[in-house]
Amino acid sequence: MPGKSGEIIDYIKNDLERDPQDIKTIVVTHHHFDHTGILDKLKKITGAKVAIHSADADYISGEKTQHGSLFMIPIVMFMKIIYRSRPVKADILLEDGDQIGDYRVIHTPGHTSGSICLYNPINKVLFVGDNLMYSNDKIEGPRVVHEPENYKKSIEKLRNLDMGVILTGHEQPITSGANNRLDTFLTELYD
Ligand SMILES: [Zn+2]
Ligand SMILES: [Zn+2]
Image 1 (cartoon, helix red, strand yellow):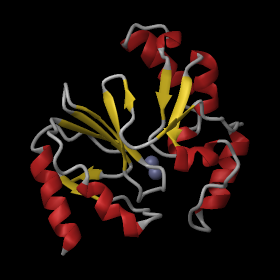
Image 2: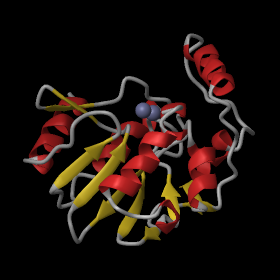
Image 3: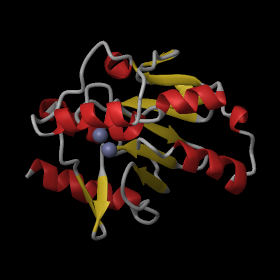
Image 4: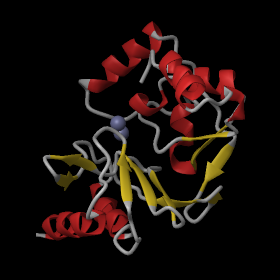
């Protein structure tokens, strides 16, 4: 979120006890402003490369404008001006199946065209960005789905992963029964 760079840098220094310049790559799950609002600042402070799926890259570079409701567009524009968010040119364009460290990129278009998940088969952690929400003990879909025709197929790709923890972009992590919870969500999605 815009305005949060200080908080993130403090976390890296004080909680993780690492130098911000130890960060080599910032992986962006999708282009939405609440996930990229301080990308320019973090890139500058850390010197890290920015990686994003090719289908979302033009939104962070400013070549395309974030699509969204007529209500959201002026709010995003207003926040960009207030927080002086600058566009960022991606250093790494990701595609489905790419590997970043121990994480595999899974392209899951739906929430945005270039939404990705990141899966680590060693510790069984799955980052889902905004592809899934988790509230009241239940997996739900995101409120905004730009490509509804692709969304179900994308989530179906996650079904066969062995998942210990699912980390969502906004809610609490899912730390138990991740596979069963996803199965339930998918069944309801097909009803
Ligand atoms: Zn989003
Ligand atoms: Zn979000």
